[in-house]
Image (cartoon, rainbow, N blue to C red):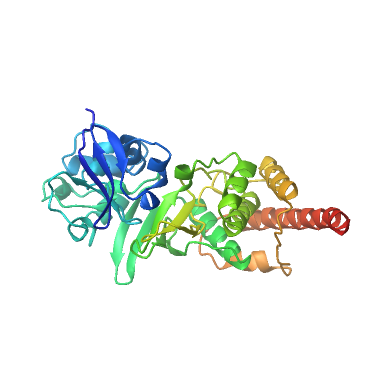
Length: 360
């Protein structure tokens, strides 16, 4: 069933575009999501915001408990006016009296259902609005409201949990901007909403037209916007190469924008590293060597002024040992130490090559 919508794309209570007969007419171009600025459709935008009912069993069951027919992913997010936890955008139908206060999420009665699965009574109770309908990704997860704001809880195997926490700790040690993660148990991790309740707008890199396999092109496009953005991207690629992150795609990194002006503030904090290190099996020194080559090509091509701080012997091991997961930590430690040394040596050789050229 095709989606027909006449009305407005809102940012809080400000109309930024009008939809009529399937056409998007910008009203505030500076505030328009980049998806629409690049001529994307409303159906595609809603699909990208919808929970994944194909990979997540609990998501399929939640759709049934909410009495939502399987008419397509766009109908899931349309059920909550397209609203999410991490930005201020939503859809207001023509003639509607709804306000942002009416549609923004204040609670989530389905957090436990989404994370752990349903109980027998969940299919017969009253239905309420939930941010789970716009909670994307393939792992079982949920948004839970805590006294200090929204937190995203996510399940995984111990190897997923360890890898995410190790990436977070190592990225912090290197001075990179990282989303905050905390251990819950061996199968659960949680991360704080890095938009602090949509005080900034998060958009994925897909809206900017960036691609996961085009590091040099991505760096160049971001450098045209801001040298800071380009450096933050280089740092993300560096960590991905170091930890052998096999799942960096255009929907799991992005940017933060000013809600009032639409200006790009920064890359979003680095998140979603749970398919790295030990998560895909036991890596050896040759695992992901193409990641290292891609990283090296980016640094050499643009002479990126990237630096990696020296790590004292045992620092990587110390970071790993405090993570309370029963996994093969020594393999991860050896893998990271080898790659870190290789990357530092590559940077040293690059500087030796660049300095004579700069002096000329």
